[in-house]
Image (cartoon, rainbow, N blue to C red; front, side, top):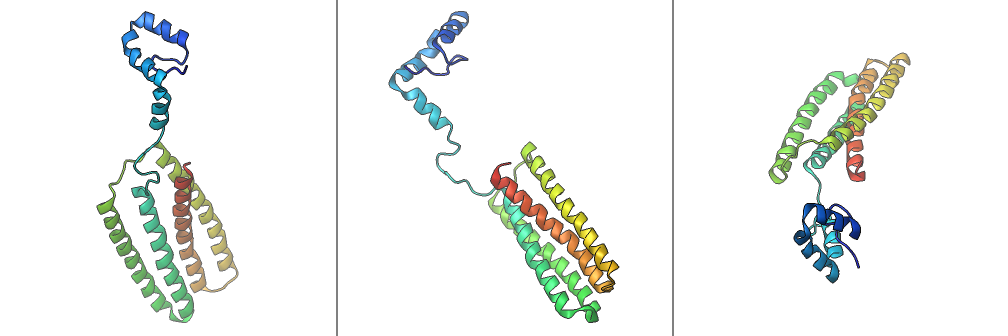
Length: 192
């Protein structure tokens, strides 16, 4: 006969000892009746289900925010680097103006995206898991940034010109941000 976990244990002898010392016999009577009906194990199984109504919960506010940052960074800076490479070093003033436009566009897209997310999903407080994921993904971005610095130094050393050195230096924080956001999304989905 199955026994419930009513009184600090899982064996009948422990139940009797606790019932005698604490005089909680009547409190466990219902649990024992449910055990006879096989209901206690059913209730235990049902209590282990996280959300019965929605078996696949949606993305949290942080995950949605990371998707907005990741996609907007890839699209906006992808356009910038494609356009600046087609213009080349002969049009450095136009590339500088393009960079300013792209920064304002990126800020506007991210503000609108976060407003739309905040209207549908309430931000939650950061817990230990969020801080751990943030630190791990920042570590990944740091490694990419450091390797990018060596790449930019190699471009400068090879004397490709100031234009290409500046583009390599601008690429560093973009790649680091992409790696940071992608790492956080992967860690959240893995449940790290």
